[in-house]
Image (cartoon, rainbow, N blue to C red):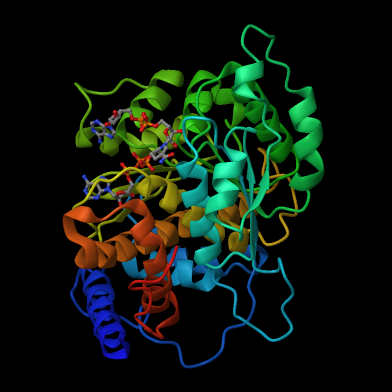
Length: 400
Ligand SMILES: NC(=O)C1=CN([C@@H]2O[C@H](COP(=O)(O)OP(=O)(O)OC[C@H]3O[C@@H](n4cnc5c(N)ncnc54)[C@H](O)[C@@H]3O)[C@@H](O)[C@H]2O)[C@@H](O)CC1
Ligand SMILES: Nc1ncnc2c1ncn2[C@@H]1O[C@H](COP(=O)(O)OP(=O)(O)OP(=O)(O)O)[C@@H](O)[C@H]1O
């Protein structure tokens, strides 16, 4: 038994290392990705670490010029808080997930569990009453709050968002990042409540990751996030097309990877949010600079991998804005805007690289049977390899 576990462990470690190697275009491990000798200090966006790490790549860059992989990995690594004996619960992140309805209970579960497995301390799921017992039943770790409208009771009723927002509002102030959309569905009352939560979160300067059905909300009402600098939009290609249509950005031809070339333009059209266009490579842009995550991932396309990504990015977003001071809105000084954009780009890059390494490891273990839930136990080993240099290689056979 122990021997088998050891074999699994070392097999996993091989996959993390493969993922790591394939993440480095020159094929050698740079200082930026090597193990760290010294303990790290806690850092915040205000320290300028993320911006400085990006500066070498971005200062000379023309609009849309591609940022360097090693610099992006260093920037992501700089966001990771050290584990210290004087930490308290919540210090390393409290993530909220707005999503989960009768049809889709898995998506918010994947996002929330991934956030805590990536290192956030707490995860809350704001879902409909129909989804709550299912989500809770899967994981005692999650704080499940059935405050979104009950879809079955709402048919034909006006989409009033006041009551759900009143229930959710007291919790928002405790969070350090919010994921909006995994498994939210398209019920009008649920969508109206989620839109109200987005407005409230934005007013409070809370970092947002918008994914899944949340992107449909944004496509229909781009003003929800337009100009908001603490927002990451994570579209797959159909979602990318809907967002582009929402802001009047023309795209060439039918759905396809070529659309990703327009990621910078889409981000520019939103004027604040970072866009992560998911696909064969993940293209990340703040409307000015572009970073591309090319690391090898899984060959499986099982549903839910985007939810694991959203939760992983949310953990990094907590670390990018530990106390979310300021509003993240337009205006303010240019240096602050630059800091926020750099931190957000680093958070997105960190999450994308993590997902790819973990899914490659899960694929190595499960092959064609790999599911999104199989990736989550591998977040640990992938995280250690990419961001801590420890490389326990753990995760094989562990529970979600
Ligand atoms: N287990 C769950 O509860 C899951 C729920 N999910 C949720 O389900 C809701 C709806 O998501 P959908 O996946 O239906 O909607 P999407 O808009 O993501 O996808 C619509 C259709 O486009 C296709 N498609 C996706 N990527 C494509 C690409 N690159 N090229 C061509 N076609 C592509 C898909 O097969 C799908 O049929 C969201 O809220 C989402 O979060 C998903 O996250 C999957 C897992
Ligand atoms: N064609 C591809 N080649 C390689 N990796 C891919 C490809 N498509 C997706 N991925 C990987 O899967 C991740 C999630 O992308 P995907 O398109 O599955 O999201 P999604 O459709 O939003 O997921 P979900 O099923 O959770 O809604 C990407 O970030 C990338 O790592």
